[in-house]
Image 1 (cartoon, one colour):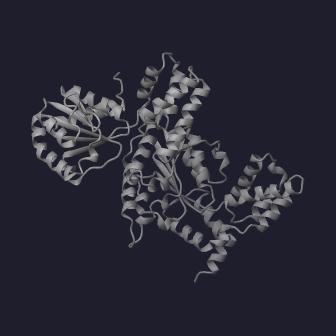
Image 2 (cartoon, helix red, strand yellow):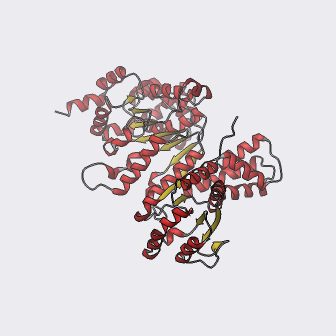
Image 3 (cartoon, helix red, strand yellow):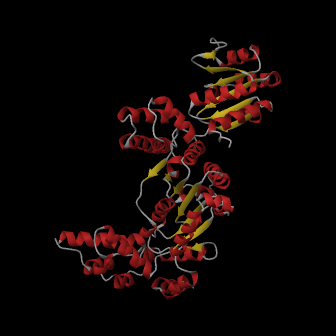
Length: 511
């Protein structure tokens, strides 16, 4: 059986293929210069080409250390031996200079003819328009578990059991080569046997780096599908999709599920459902903070998004949670005031949703469908669109019971059937606050919680369904025929809407 190639080996082969096709420049986007140089040397070996590396500090080594300025560099490459592959580390800072760009354009035909190839390495893409047609852009993926395992073996003299090796490399997945090396070194100094303390340190380092550098949060959650009240249709759908992650599903002809969009009323369990999906699938949960991706000045939004998605792929299988996705793309809807940056970000994200090959299951949530770009709703981006409505009577009872159990109370002591009926059209978040508010009330009076406390707090709450009655009505109308209901069967839901006070008041107030 043939051994699968690592990500570095795949890129090295692709670079060699591009140069064989006489592509003069390959732009390798990665923060890992050392790993990029090794990949380029592997590609040069396949081409039987000499390799040299240039930086502004060292010049072109080993051929011409004096060629520190970019014009001297180009002349040195032109006069040097061929075939050659020159790895340029600081070059994107230089080719915006008109003289450098012109000299490079003049030399490219000779470089191509004589087999002199350039590999530009940078952590972000900065490509002048006049060189775009002569340049192939590749992104070096984050090191996979095979590469991380080899790195760990070089750093430690100990031979770890397979289980420890697997847990260590899994904990470090999603880090760059340099970041993983530093995390391994710290862990080994703390715990040479890589016991629980050492593994926790690797994971802690990853959490910090993901949040700081990649706008990704590694989320720990003990929420299960039993934590979600109602949403029977959604739960059944998730149970079926969980089976599709099994190896037997590939043999059966099924591919890994791609993701789900949850649209609906605020506070009705969309975020809780995202956490529960990861637990049901038994995979890590990553939260993508699109607000951080679109903010700041350290790199373009597209570059930050590409890095974050690449890190998520390196941790696959995983669930990627994108909360309130419409806020990031608010500038892409409507006829006026469109945001070109938001459009580019939407294009990049939509393409990744459509084309990704790694088993990253995306759970996106949205509250305001009027700001949701239609590109995200196309089939192929997500497997299914679910509408999450206000919970019905039985779901309200389940939610109240869950929050009471979570706080050490027996739900059977609190007359929940009557309370659930009293709380018609309350959201899940509001039902939780009834329990929390009741506990505050009873604690302040130095006694145990009782059903009267819950009823009193419920009477004092003005539910969102009252404040935003027209918006919820419009949301339901939009979802009809466009989405699948996450709760009970449609006929039962329709009956609930027709007989509920919210539905009646909405009907009488709209002519």
